[in-house]
Image (tube, rainbow, N blue to C red):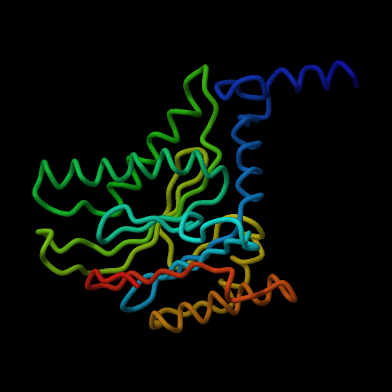
Length: 233
């Protein structure tokens, strides 16, 4: 038994080493880190995309604006994360640079998927090369399809999530962070297509109320609505 434990321990020394069962253990450890982070819900609505993020309990010594979890990437893209906040900050800064480079190069707004794909590529690299660890963060990107020039309108609301491994998927509704599986189970039961932005916020709050019970308080949430015409609330 002791020999088996020593063998298993050897496979989690680096993110580039596969265990005999085909898993990369450092990646799986990083995935557990995500579930220690506070939860966020994203919902695609008929005219907008909504993100509701739990900041957990407020510390009255902290300046409230500095603890905002929802970040702007471009005028039509926002992002929220769960996991190690410093890892998220580095990737958010990179996403912002990518968005600005696209505008300078092509004189048009980048698509949400192009930004998500580039960030997912960075995450994948850190599961492949030695001397570094995976990014311990899951990121949910909400956006609206750019209409062309920066001054033109925007179209379809979209929602993407990237995981530790560098995969990304497009969602109608999703959750990351603490209790994500429980939240997604409720969303599968209650989500319907064609919700308005206000109905999307109401649904997210109902889900959090069901999950948190007596600890639920509306004051502990950040809410952002990105409307199809590009306005943020």
